[in-house]
Length: 108
Length: 124
Figure (spheres, each protein chain N blue to C red):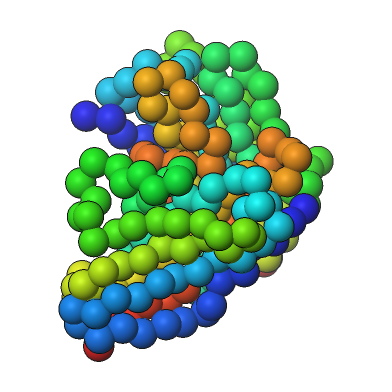
């Protein structure tokens, strides 16, 4: 199976922009979905497909893909955005799913 | 409201089996695939497999094949995940999650509704 690679940790100043990336071979022909997970909570879907936000997700979250890299961008980060972020996608040519290792985002 | 409610925490010894259930409510049970995802303490998310509640068809992660069994009972809108030959390394929070479907189109890897998680502890 393929792998998705994320930076383990990132930080962003309050109100600034941050781009969280996810790299993997499966992303060359599949979009990633993105999840936000806060301590003690189940993951929350924040982005899917080309650039789609589920209902209730603020528009400061956006998604993109270039080559084998998917990105989740937060424009104007808020204190409540501090969380772990995970990407996932369909595994290459299979009915399996693969998750990235997660990025711990700190809002300074 | 739409929700998935999982069964309670379990403690097992190595070599034993555990079965975790996930009851759906607030939507048509058979219309949405259910995935299972686990998270070891302090670690990331690991995909385990999925079940099609309509047909009962399943797929599971290669590294778990042979140990994980996914089933459903449509009469009570419940899916279950049984993991056998448990190891200490199977200690984790186990989640069920519903696959997103928009106007009848399934988004393969997007999980929009999650259960609250079931802690499974494997210890001798």
